[in-house]
Image (cartoon, rainbow, N blue to C red; front, side):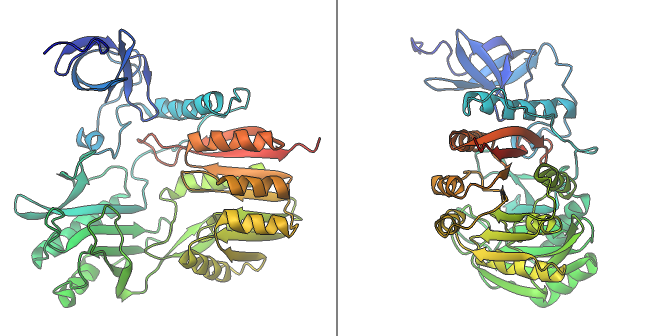
Length: 460
């Protein structure tokens, strides 16, 4: 094959390279004649023999064939499959290095996107034990070698890698998945075949309260039939006494979306309980609830610390979900208004406020940007605005409403450094000072990082 003049490497070639940096996903970066190669399980400073397995016009991918030197930040892998499935892509990196990497991700976007290199980015808040932290698992079910099997898909594929120990999940959840899997095998439940859209059981979802120990099992099926339910449900109850809820979610569509629209409660109610920041929450099978309870409390405490309330404040909590941050704010504020677009979440939030005897909270159903704009037009004011948007960040209309309403203080909780930096630049243009950013590690062994940012209104 004639070598492409613009690309200095060809597929299947082997080269010796030195890793120079990491991508935001945690892949090693090496360069050959200025051409970047992205390499899994590689750390800065390491020298390795690599094999090119994919090339594009501006970058390529390579695989380590022989590691010639090892970084001081390298630690032994728990299991290579967890890198291949994308469950623990940073498992080869010491935890101290992971925390430094996540701080750098935030600092990089503040310089590159926000153009604010002067904003202090604090050291990432980590965990004492950065394994076994997830309180929720959504595990696909497929047939492997003739047997109903649970595991995880290989990255960028629909090939199931059988797994029994996920390492990052609460070990009790891993045990529950195996118990439910074995019951499904015993009673001949057919695993889903997405190629033919046949079979029935698509996913096993397990949620567990960290403080209560209560467990919810969700069986995601292609059809409403689940035979023999009369034997499956008692078997799950006997194997897992901590289960308070079993829900069947029906998803007939050929889609990557896990949950369907229809839900059938098979045992208990569609809820379990957990505690967070001293409040009790009832959580349904669809509810968004942070997956790392220990770190979520650190995240929310940072929100409260940055807010530094006196008890006289009127607060708006946008994107409030089932009210987890709202109720924490309510203990310190005069009045809190929560905004949420998902109707079921608003009902959960109202119920959770009543459950905890909180009376200084009002919830508003609607898109945060539309509600905020309406309130701004009505000349409503707030002393503090707290936002916790999805990965896409704030809508332009929402930022316009903030600049119109002019809350004196704003706390921005983000799960995406890039959209955070974009939004902070716009808010700074509109008269806000970005005071500091606190990264918090809610997802150890992965490249994801949450952060809390304090902004104050520049009255001048």
